[in-house]
Length: 162
Image (tube, rainbow, N blue to C red; front, side, top):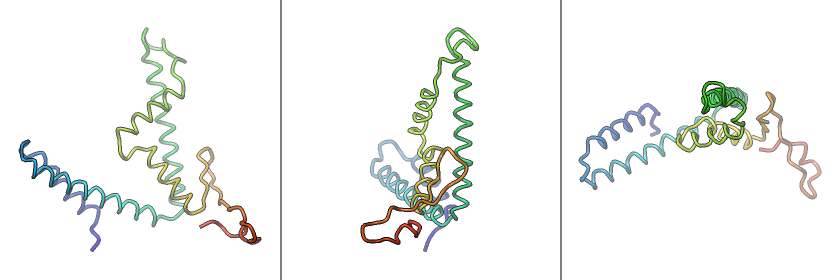
């Protein structure tokens, strides 16, 4: 029987509460709780993947476009905040922070968060790629990828890649 995400999250909360309450020196109990937490996280991840795979391509494209807009807004927000807070006072560091530095900062944030916006974008792009849709990050339109014909298969190029 497949459990709902709500059931998994409820049990995960119970496991985390038990882990917090567990004595520091009860290694067996802590190991069991940590193992259970890992299993629950894996189960939740599988549900997320299944949910994503069941979404329609247009829904994924819409979510991807929104995610790109949020990421761009975050880059602009971080860039403005960082530039305005340089040594020497407000506005002294304008122009000192490049877009590359902001991107590096975003990558550092991604490393700390398992479900960051950047990883969500990558997940959505991978789903679209598996469906044969090329979602160019720089445009609002996606195009269907047509694979190159194979040797001896002159009609292969007429069918979309699956």
